[in-house]
Length: 197
Ligand SMILES: [Zn+2]
Image (cartoon, rainbow, N blue to C red; front, side, top):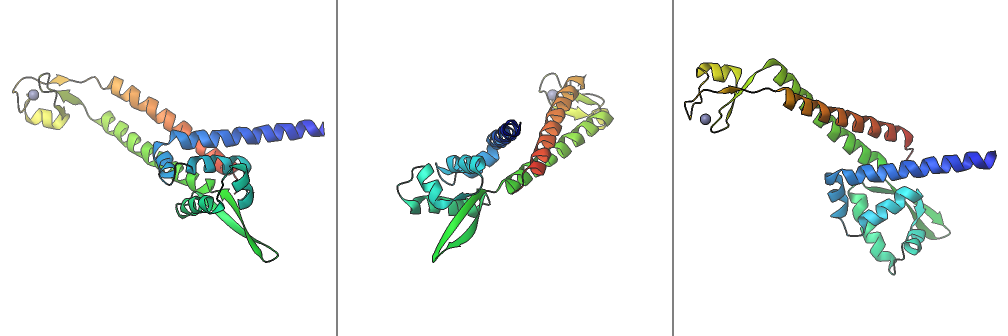
């Protein structure tokens, strides 16, 4: 019974790690932020997400680096960009470094971005609810209600009658995006709660 519980717990943990990596990879901006450090940065990041807090010498051997300095240089660059963190440990006279992925920071950045997107799209939906839109069938310029009225529902440029746009489709699309964003936000917030370092 006991061993069964342990298996379940470790597979949940694995699942969580995979989901975090997936979320990071889905966010083009974050992905670029990590990848532009070094071609190896993503590999190191994934390794740290999966392995938690790891002694530098173990990373060197696990990821098969010939030069420890080379790895440290990348790790410092990642540290400067808040992607990883480290702790020092004294072993006799030697100072050892323990590295870990700074998931808290990355999740905060992703949550902030999703919140901004949600805010923006909710505003757009609100605006569309209170306004009607018209389009010129020739030049395809769009007018809101008051501008269209000012010009007697004629296009300023083409002088031909404007057509009323059925915004239902646009609205449905926006609602769908909003739903996805809300789902992503919920996921990110749940991860943040579960991640302990
Ligand atoms: Zn026109």
